Structure formats: C-alpha cells, structure tokens
Image 1 (cartoon, rainbow, N blue to C red):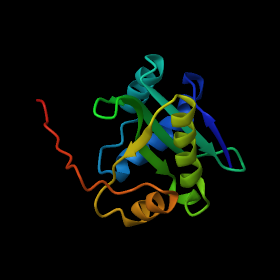
Image 2: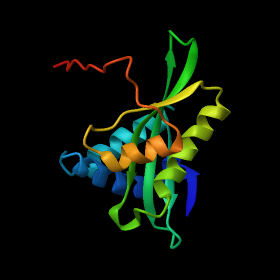
Image 3: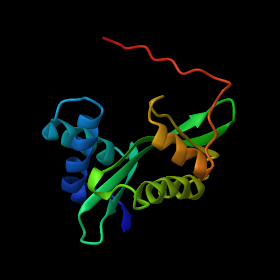
Length: 148
C-alpha cells in the first residue's frame, strides 16, 4: 500500500473513489459534479486529501481533511470529513493508514486534534476509531441547519 497527498493532476483516481463513496451514502452517481467539487477544494487549498494505492497501483481509498479552528480550545483542528476504502481493498489496513495520514497532517500543521463523525450504525468504523485512540464525544451534540 502506498499513501500520498493528492494533487489536481491525480484527480481521476480520486473521482472514481469519491463517486463510490457518495453512492455508498445513497447519493447519485455524478462523477462530473464530484470532479468539479474536488477540483475546487484542491485549487482553493480548502482540503488536504490523501489517496491510498494498492500494490498494483490502483486507487484503493481516500481521506479528505478540512482545516478548521476551535475557539474554545484556541487551536487549529483537522476535520477528517470523508474516509472511504473500496470494498475490494477492505480489511487490509488501508483505512488505518489513511487515518494515520490525517493524524500526521495534524501534527505537522500544529493542530491540537483530529475530529470526525460517523453514522451511528457504522459499527466497524467506530470500532476502528476507538482502537486507534479516538474517543466518542459525550459532552456535545451535533446539529445541522439546512439552508435552502
């Protein structure tokens, strides 16, 4: 497995994985839309994205991180927003390798922590996060407001 920080030049493999990720989350397959979105994130330096390649150099998974801040903690945080490993490559340590890339990004940028969220029924992911050392937040609830 080879994990590297992606550039705009490597968008093709990422778009293929991102499309699979979106379909997994019951969104429509829309590679052109996702290419535009990801291109903007990279062009504007809004996100740091790592991609994992299999031994035969096929895109196997990715992690997309946003840079943010915590006013209460007075520090920079990394938001591990999207993590996906293609079903063909699961159970090979790729997800852990991608998460480690996010943690190393946080360390290298002086961030104080890495935050993430997952569906309440995604027990395999929760198990992995806790095994790595993430702790489930119990002091705060998350809320969203959809702007139309």
